[in-house]
Length: 322
Length: 290
Figure: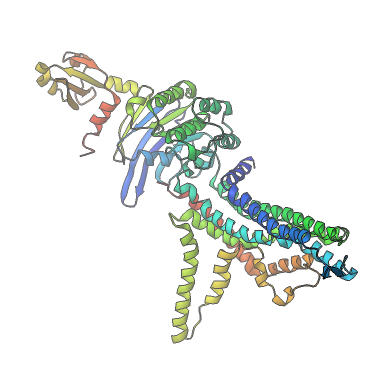
């Protein structure tokens, strides 16, 4: 356990920029753009006032109660949506992290240093899996929640300065407290969906002698193209079908796209995902998300992911580094 | 006491090429063994097999363990430097010390810090800011602070200047080595290690060409400075090597060759002395470069 702790720390030393600074910079950009825009709008314009020829014709001080409630509900349930750009950064960062994880130290030969220390290849690979599937998402979620809260404070402050005080209704809405929990409770689901991708990338990372990215992306895509071509020929001359679509959806999409947060929604009936009136219903989304686990293919893919991780361990153990 | 390392029919093939060809040897505890051979002779392959880095055929036992199946167990008591200047570029000196302290139960932090204090390394320095020599210094400081039962050094001082090299071997002997420990060294700079070695293992084309303790070697091999008038008589005794220094012939004799030679016999020919390991190596390896 102690070794695992140090192995994970090692990964964070090496990839501090990708795991910590990348989300922080993106979050800061969101804050500056949206929060700054909000503050600018608040203090530069006398919003809600209409003047004609110097005579004030209309001034809105506050909102009618139903609109006010709805605005508060949307804020309380949906403020975490500000963090969504971060959830696009995460898969990119983790994708390239996994590709490099078992390759870079073979390329610069520092693997010979790590292998001279008493830690097994299983532990090393597992530490990288843990970083990709747990540590990196947690850091992103933490940065996301923090920046969303900050933005919410700015928005509430801006509203209050214009006489629309929503602090009370937002804070008394249970969704305000539940939203971060909903987000966090999606992590186990995310891990299951991301396992095949992480497994595949680590396998290629420990196998390829060079050009990891080309191998990782090229093998599935070229296979898919070849299958499509065969399918075309066979379909034309023999009237058979070889499941290109299945391969694309069940294999290629899962081993390349599993890191995308929310990828499971593509397996949910779109009718159920219709936009809702009062912001995001976190509980409902959580339920829908976990309902995708009823399909056995998720589990088969996750097991395949574990098998590929095991393959990566074996390769790392026996690959001759010259 | 059982040997630290014992090989029986150790073989490693790369495709059709045989890198290590069924060698047998034993290394007891408390020895400093020089594993010496030309490039491509199989010495690095032998070490990698012993460290569980590659698969192999035959039997090999290191500290009583099989490096193929019990590597994780083995690495608690073995440490090695398999290549120089291979620390990752992003690693900081203080992080490296923290990490090794964290994962290695036999790491002595104070010792490592003492070695590092003797260099220009700073705690916040990253490997990418270091010269090649400094990287080697950091690596050696980390490894020397690990109290391993077997230490394997494959060309450990490449890229170091001579002052630090001397210092390193001095530390290795005085500070690190004791009768419980075993050190295996390969190096091209044989002259620098010969005075600290207790055993020699010459390897040539995947086979052991010579395996002996330094004492045995001192008794077995004799170098004689033969004046010109005695050259013919000396040649009759079949020297294994001959060269000329300042007009005098220097001949190397194997006292255990068929028939045997006595020291007295050789002393009659001229000034007698112990050959250097380098000269012995060249004589033994003759033909392998041809």
